[in-house]
Length: 387
Image 1 (tube, rainbow, N blue to C red):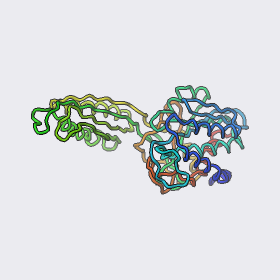
Image 2: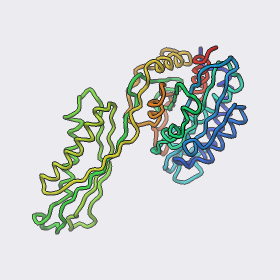
Image 3: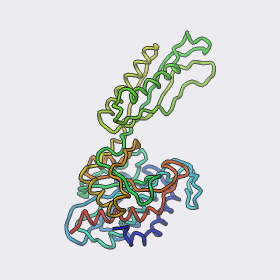
């Protein structure tokens, strides 16, 4: 079964919505215009219920099938953009300096709106589809806020599914896997305290710059020598701040970075070893180190039965050869992980073609993917909730 004809017919309209959203990016929870746009469309489609203000600015629309009673299944799209100056050169580029849809959330929102329009027209299923439009995926934890607002229980959502575009994968292709699919994302800050002095007399000081260099090298041993080589862990020092003059050894140096893991035990190990390594190395040089470790999004873990079902649907849409059931886990993070901790479900990747990478100032969502995304959502709904 190829892509749905009606999904192809909807593509120009949905692409228009997508380009409007691309021109008007909003960040984190401040997605008021985007949420209002989504709300207006859902009401125009004839959704049975449209509720706003979930997780601050999230929107949920309920579409009841005409084949009788059944469970409620949630489909989620994210709405927020990134704090990046756009350099894509497209005529529908961002009209707001410093903000752009560099991760394709405009496409995710538009595709789910397209599916909502189709499902509200046909209602060829039993039960209810909840279309979930979430703010603040890019670091704000909007999924968790919507859950804490009672979304899952209020709408009796029994399963939940998500989708994200993937540059470099051909349009029409899909990929996913059961189990860990995207990494947990944690942040750390290490403040190394030494003793300042004249740069020409280092023996009279305790140099935190030197200590920081040894700490940075020491942290690389976590992945290189302490984790199983067949398991994934990333420890990256991404920033370093200390000193202002060429001839002064500073009192302190601050390091900041991220940890990415796919297993809870590796996450625990990395947190402990960062503390041990930083404080131990600092003490060896006569300095001290203070470590602050903040846990962010958890691992995105696909449930096996729901992933198998999603793969069945993807193969109906694109055929066996275009679907990977062993997609390599990504070390990026995704707050859909909170929804998968709350309910069984699956997260899949949809091909975006040969485009710039995510979070790149030249990125743009590929509108040719729209019919495939709509077809996936619609076929999933009609198959999962068959009368």
